[in-house]
Amino acid sequence: MTFILITNDDGIASPAVPALFAALRGIAERVEVVVPDQERSWIGKAISRHGSIDVHEVSFDGHVGYTAGGTPADCAQLGIYNLFDATPDLVVSGINIGANHGSAYTIGSGTVGAAVEAAIAGIPALAASASSRRDNWPEWNTTMRRPDAVPRWEPLAEITAAIAAEMLAAPPADVDVLCANYPDGATPATPRRVVPLAETHYGQLFQRQPQGHYAHDWTSDMKGRTETAGTDVATVLDDECVAITPLRLAGLAAPVQGLERFAAH
Image (cartoon, rainbow, N blue to C red; front, side, top):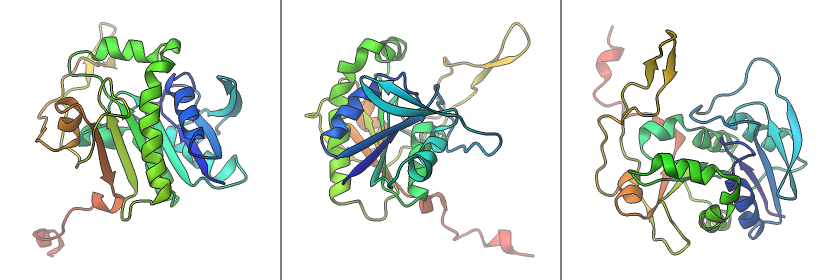
């Protein structure tokens, strides 16, 4: 029996959850959902080391899932090791409300972090994210979070299920996580490309408030953005194609050549 675990960083209220659940039920006999009890975006692969995690059974769209008072990576851990009588064949994290392309966003993404946690457990993992256009993020973000937005997520869920089916049929060799990013308005007919991660950077993220504290400011612009043709960012935003980017944990290590001076003593 094929078993897929769904998690995310947007929580059970995300309208992507029922759409993704329905699509994955079309390719797997068993689909389970374990997601945070609230939005936990941009938290990476953090694990709740201190304190306890409350887990609750919840219903969504007539189905049963679980919420956890922890991080997306916690949810992956609980779904893999604690809550079920079998180990998932595949973990699908997402579909995220917002892009996770480019190195700056990818490394901090809770969606990607949950997929990385699955990869550490030796389970193939797919992190799926939906992107706005360059000029419509505020409107797009509000629209895609509405409870009645489920139909907007259904085409993206179909794409995710198609990629997941390929992974189940033949898990890619030497790949820990596949990251899929979808352009605004993507459908199953939208071309897909396997492309590398763009190198991206951002600048100041916090602004001083009148009360004297500092708060995250979403209006901060990305700085030093490198969007060479053929990367995930350009593929989604410029070419309006689906970008599929393979990640490998060992790839975090840079080449050692030329750094011998650090070992000299």
